[in-house]
Each structure stands twice: as structure tokens, then as C-alpha cells.
Image: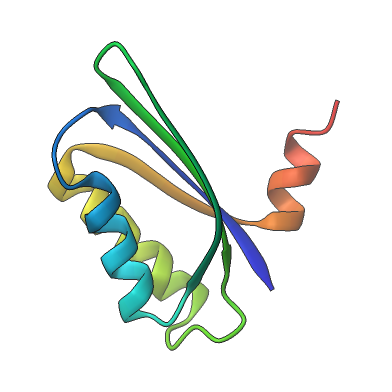
Length: 89
């Protein structure tokens, strides 16, 4: 089972480390990552494997949301199929 994580906010030190530490602690594997900084706006999309996650999807979502609040970012996770359906043209 895979999910898509999006991260958007003002660039600062520790964004990737903060998000990836949450994922590693929950046994979630990062499959692909795309990140860019447009002026001072940080954007990142991650494709992750949640099939061996040690926490529920809701628990993972809550942890990422809390990290986002701490870093003053928007951090969202969606199941891959839902993300794909919402962004299909």
C-alpha cells in the first residue's frame, strides 16, 4: 500500500529531516521524493510505502500534521489511489 505526502511552506532548516524522522519511526519507506524551493517557498512530494507501517494511517497522518504545525508547514498524506483520482485530468 502506498501513499503520497505533500509538504508546503516557508523554507527552513530541518524540513526533510523532520518529516523523514517521523516516517522512519513509523517504519514507512520513502520510495520517491521530489523537492524544490521557489524563492523561499519549500515544496515536496513524497511517495511512500505504508504497507509495513507500525501505526495506523490515521496515526501517521496525525504525527505528520503535528510535525507540520511545529515547523509551520502544511503536511498532508493521502492514499495513492485517492491522490491519483483527484489529480487525473
